[in-house]
Length: 241
Ligand SMILES: [Zn+2]
Image: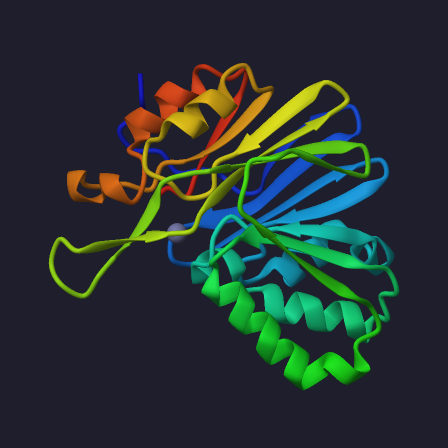
């Protein structure tokens, strides 16, 4: 049974051996920030506002410099608001290794942030940024982790009543050491997320729809729980406070 009112207690932490995930927070319209790590890697998922502050609470600066990959579900401000400060910090701290940033093809926000960032800091940047625009669900590997991106169904409201626009949006499945974590990003109930969450060791699911009118944009608590129960464990996030 889905609880009527539920407020996640951040940070949410899950660990199996050296496969570790910490959700610093995921609050609609404010910020999402997630750290995923293994023995040999540090990845960031959705660097929302405050990501740098939260990372500094969990990791020492040397380990922050070891971040190799950033995964962005979509371009809404509460999912990428911390990109600028994170990229700047890595250069100030003299990161030397390549940083890959994965995001859905057509994500105007990420493209714009990168263009402006490059204009301001391009000449003095100590590391290389590699933008990876994702337009298919083809899996790839990074540091012993298999990553499968998948498209989800997220929208944003237009200026006229009832009007909505599709937002290029991804979820990601991370498999390491035979353990799978699925993160759905922001999405209405969709088949791809249900399939990717089934039997996952952990499913991270948004439950952002408070009212029936919002179910085109987000999932209700009931929908998120239904998907969550097909996984071994699940976290509900992005719950309106
Ligand atoms: Zn969103």
